[in-house]
Length: 462
Image 1 (tube, one colour):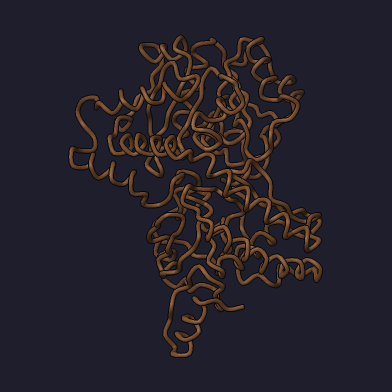
Image 2 (image 1 turned 60 degrees about the horizontal axis):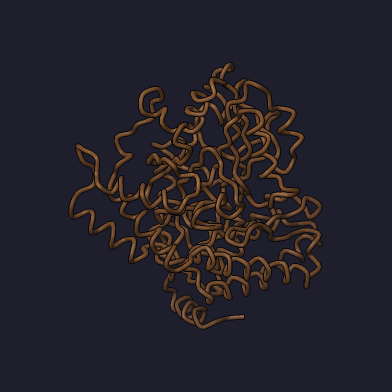
């Protein structure tokens, strides 16, 4: 089925004029010549070529998917070859309103006129902290930094100092620092003694936490949810166990904060953790992170615990955060994310049901951020995901198996995406029934970021 955009493409092809793909049912897979040229240049001087694994070439079907982005606007991006896509990765989380969002960009430009980083504290540090204190339940005290990994590690350090204990129990993904990444397969360079201080428990498995929780556990750090919802009052039970054991509870709200509710998962579930950390979403792409928590714990940063960084008070990011949070509150952004995300989740599952594919694939998660999964009974899940990817890229959708919603995802974006699923899922069914998904790939399948090791909780690529 050809649409209006395809007519232009066909005419261009007839005239032998190379035209980039658009958000339409394109006849051809996108031309990625410039992406591949940049990739070849990068391989000569960068190891690896990506600064974030979730953005790297291993997460997209090699040989078919673009590798480099040129620009973005709203919920759309353009790669370096000029191909346009609806983006459901959204910068792997930070883009909550949309690319080049006017209110946020105006705030950045206005602050840029006055400067970026200064020799003394900036007034925005106070103004942003006052705002965070107002909207996040546990924010008796606030620290500002740059990345999620930084504030996670700062939270762990101050928890150890406050409790006088050494062990950390975790559930989810918490960044690249030694105390956490030693639980994964990418643990080279981390001393054995540090690895032994951290262990992981399973989400929604209270017994797995109880088995590890002893008198030397300083803190439990977990993502309030990734995609699965808490069962049997899981989060409240975790909080109760921590309190009874004298262990601090840390919520890692990189994904839940400002999405499920402006005040994050602690507002949504009615739980006030001892500490909480945020980074993605609340500055619409600018690099900034928050550590919030009990004042008696956070006061240790005054003299006893060191956590400082030159760029913690960088003003452009704080201006962006103020503007983003204001827009979120005024426009009730979390409700819009849930509304649009629910359409995609329910629509995907309805199409899968109509095709008799529900035993093989489903879309689930909280509406603001959902995941499409594939059962191994259908074949290699990585190959199936790669097949879906290559077909959706052809139809103008940048897809990594997730629906990371932003405020700019329009009704037209959602409708086109569901039309694409109606087009692609029958192709997937045909490939599964023929047992030849791999032979239909035009490139190499996607890769996992981590291998699971014995004391690590399952970690999905993010």
